[in-house]
Each structure stands twice: as structure tokens, then as C-alpha cells.
Image 1 (cartoon, rainbow, N blue to C red):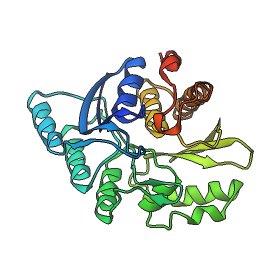
Image 2: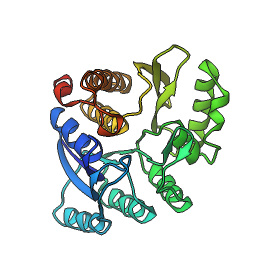
Image 3: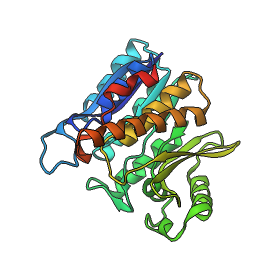
Image 4: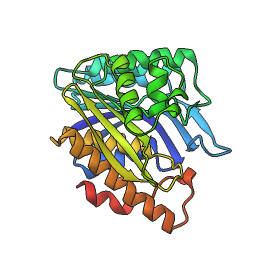
Amino acid sequence: MRVAAINDLSGLGRCSLLADISVFSAMGIETCAVPIAVLSAQTGFSSYYCKELTGVIPEYAEKYKGQKVEFDGIITGFMLNETQAGSALEFIKTLKSEGTRVLVDPVLGDDGKRYMNFSEELLAAMKEMVKEADIITPNITELCLLADIDPTEHSKYLGDELIDYILRVAEKIRGNRKQLIAVTGIPLPEAGEVGNLIATELGHGIIRAHSNGVHYSGTGDLFAAVLFGGILNGKDPLDAAKLAGDFISASVEDAVKNGISGNEGIAFEKHLGMLI
């Protein structure tokens, strides 16, 4: 199988295209990287070099279309601005065939806050991308932003009430009744646990995972890639999400043991065998 991954390439941070290429390779899937930018380090670091590559997206699409390249999947991640999101959307429309699955990770914010590159124009472009997706992997903040809801409102709810709230919001953004929505990083009443909610037109399920409360770079990218790779390989979405959660939990444990900071990402390299 072959997947096109539209994302940035960051040197430090164990995220984005590095996560995509590592995960898909372990899962037996060829990765065609479409870099939207190259960075010396992911944007959580206090200082980094960034070279924007917006123009390569339509050029890649044109070449691949001319070469009649076929993709089993297309995955998108971080977008610097609305121009990149618009180009990524055109890439999807140009290269998506009847058998192509599309996953959009709508990177917009976290913990009730918008990322520094957020704009209303980027949000509008991301909403259009979401309409083309078969799978969406927002955190709660991003889910609310896509639904034009205050991204801090969910903090009023706990436990089952929070899950019901998330399901209601998810229905507001579902562009296709068969669309799978995976909401990540949901705080659970149990100490030290977070949940990932998998919602389809047939119902929903929650995958629980251990959390040490530290925010690590790249966990969203890794979750999306493992979930996508599992589904493309024929796994049930809940089983694929469980694999992603177990993979990330094991990698977090190694990060803690080795004193790796949150900005450096989780130590997933030794656990890629879980995905083979």
C-alpha cells in the first residue's frame, strides 16, 4: 500500500513526517512525503528555523497526477496557514480515487487555546478539508473550533457528561454519515488516565490510556498514523486505536526513564516492533 503524507518535517521533536514515515514503514505501508515546511525543531521549542514550502504541494499533485500515481491513503497534519490548507485540499481532490481513504488531523490548538498560527481563514480552510475526510483526529479543542464552539466550554463537564457533550459536538461537524471521528486526549475521572473516543455512524467506544500529565510533542501525529495504518491494514477502528494507545503509552514510559523533555517527543523508536 501507499500513503501520501502532507505534513512538515521537523528535525527535533519526533513528530510530523518523521512520525508518519516511521509508523507507516513499520506497518508495511509506503510513505510518499509531501513536505509543507522544513524546520530545525518543532514549534514548541523557543527557537527554530522554518523554511516554508507551500508551493511544492500543487507541484507534487500535478506530477503525481501526470504519472498516474495511486494512493491507498492520504493523511494531512500541521498547516502553517490557509494557503497550505487550501493546497492540501486540492491535492486530496486531485489524487483521491474511489479506493483512497483520507485522514485529516485538524491541527488548530490544544488545552482550550489556539496555536500561534491560528487564524479564522485557516479554520475555514480546515473545515473544507474535514468535509473531504473519511477519518478526522481532533483533540477536544480542535473539535470545538471546527464546530464554532468556545474551546473551553467542555471543561464544565466530567465523566459521562463530557463524553455525551463530545458526541454532540462531533455530530455538528460530521460531513459524511460514514465519517469516523477519533477525539484524542479526553480527561477521564480516573487519576492518570486519558481517553480516545472513536465515533462512527454505528456507535462509539472509548480507548483508555495511561497519562503522566506531561504534554509530549508528536503524540497526536503518532496516534493518527497508527490509527490510519491499522485501518488500512484491515483492523477494526477500536482495535487500531487500542494499538495506537498502547504504542504511545510504552513510548512515554521510555521517555520518562530517559529524561526526555516534552518538546523532544516520546521515545517510540524501540517500540516500532509493536506495529509490524
